[in-house]
Length: 198
Image 1: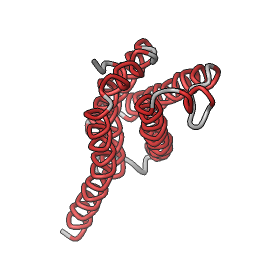
Image 2: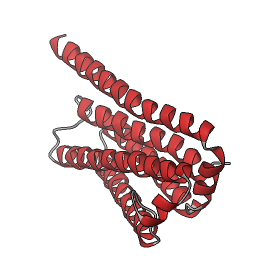
Image 3: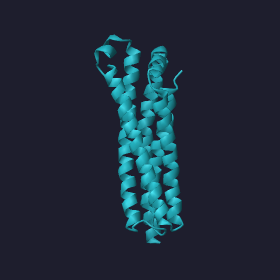
Image 4: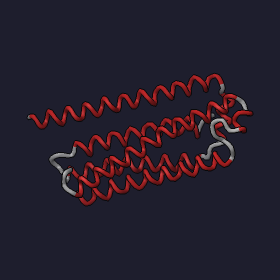
């Protein structure tokens, strides 16, 4: 019974942590909405400067990776640890590809002078400057969460291999999965706000 209480407490703690993450990004999304209502045309123009292909590929990567993480939990429950490792490694790799895509996307923007306080941004309309300022803050913060999630997936993979995560005790994997799903959900909001803004 004591172990069950520990597991319940661990899960509750994770949900409370995720709530703070939702509040953080929720506040940024509200800030985006406030500026969008003031600089609608500049935001739409800024959105057209982003590459839809990058955003679409990254969305697909995170959706498939979330499925892989969920599948790894199911595999552990069924006591098939090898597929669990394969699913976790797949999710980890997809997170890495996401970051590589973001690196090239940011690199292209910097190459074209689209970065905070650049001469191009300073001389342009204020709404465009705010749009890209928020773009770097929100996608950068999200990228940091991807890195944290990948670390958690790496730890879980190691624990599955060492059989520290197994059918009788996989709360660490469940909580890491919840974190990864949250990162996915946050991107589902980011994608239309920036890449599909009209």
